[in-house]
Image (cartoon, rainbow, N blue to C red; front, side):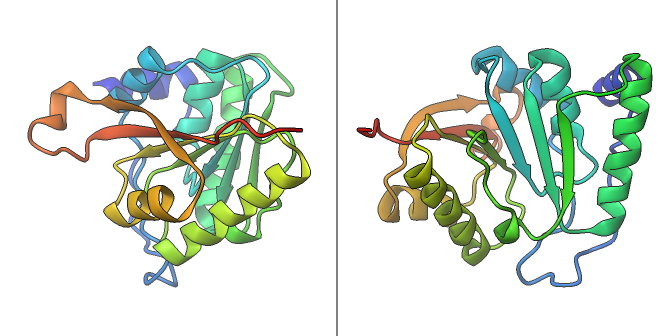
Length: 205
């Protein structure tokens, strides 16, 4: 029911896409974040108006449109699968038409996550287990290098985070766990049903 309501509201189609990645060892099949989970995220996590969120493995763009609609921040989606990228672009056109806008701060890029050049404005990064740990490590290193160039407030939002992701962040990076947002509807049956928020410690200029 939630999916039908939000897809109609946003004028998008983001259902399951069955094709698997050509490199299934490192890039995982598309699975959109449930709308109930996105509701829980926004109930507990506040975006600032100047935030720019990057969704790695964005698929058809569900997260991007939901966050843009309710938080009005700049959102970017990174997707390596060309078919999914085209679906996200089509959804963007439909979303803008429904909102009666010609332009919005929504952008999609068709490229490998580790090849995306982190912009100085990018400061919120979303991961729903889109790829293997080696790719995740490369992306995190790209983010950290970008902060060395342009010091800023950066946070990671991980949904259903793998143990490998958590161990790497907490033992091999300077990111610190800031917050845990559990999903009461599913958490008792599956403790992975939660969002983990990681932040960088304050850096001197």
